[in-house]
Length: 316
Ligand code: SF4
Ligand code: ZN
Ligand code: ZN
Image (cartoon, rainbow, N blue to C red; front, side, top):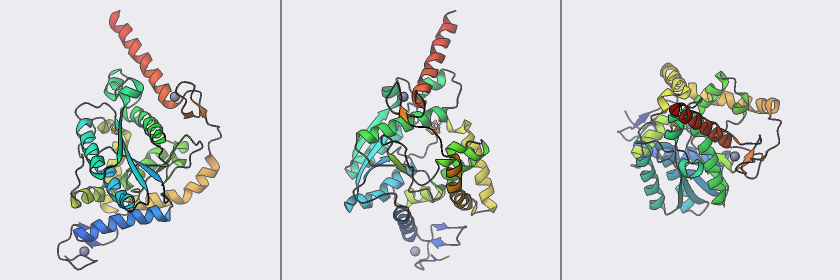
């Protein structure tokens, strides 16, 4: 089988959804061009932006960093990276080392910030306290709090996350099935924050399937952390991911159609369900919040209560 673009004999991927077969060079180019085109078309990044990549060291964030580096090298943007250490034993350390290596190789500013230093609790300690929510709920809220605050402190004008097509499809379905309309209105290629203290977040890989991100990393020979988080198996997201994966076997365009359909109804959804609250500052940490206490502080207080209750029960 030949590459449908250059006629070369060895192909690295056959795209079932489009019928394209690509050699390694044409595949790499197609991903880079697609991502940069989406950035231009949707005005995700402008000349002079100071872009902070949420760099976990996994394949998605490593890919987006690699592609954005072409804009950094041409001095179109400034580039920096933020890595969060959630405190997941046996999982996060290697990813942090890989992230640090990438940042060093590109010569960009890099900050590593831990849950422990910000909240005095690691994710492992939170989960050991027998809390009422799943690990990903705590992890997502606390990580977003740190990334926004750190990006603001670093002077970033955009935060880039490595969410791919699979992630985005899962988020749409999860929030729809849970009836979480507020969250649905926030899904998209970029955020439109209601406070200057929230840095705009963008997702340049939103239209790239996870499988292709994996192939890109291998094709470009980029070092990335491939191990799965030990908490991910128990999540609702993992169940939805499996359903979408199964459906995609016979319906290879299903993720694209879910995304396209959602983007069409999103405008109407936003009009109907725009949250009617004014953002204030959290009375505990000062970060923007819809309530007196932001979700991060609320969760920390809940967990502290759990820990005190557990100690009390253990002593009596
Ligand atoms: Fe955090 Fe869940 Fe991701 Fe693990 S899978 S890093 S707990 S959000
Ligand atoms: Zn080719
Ligand atoms: Zn707070």
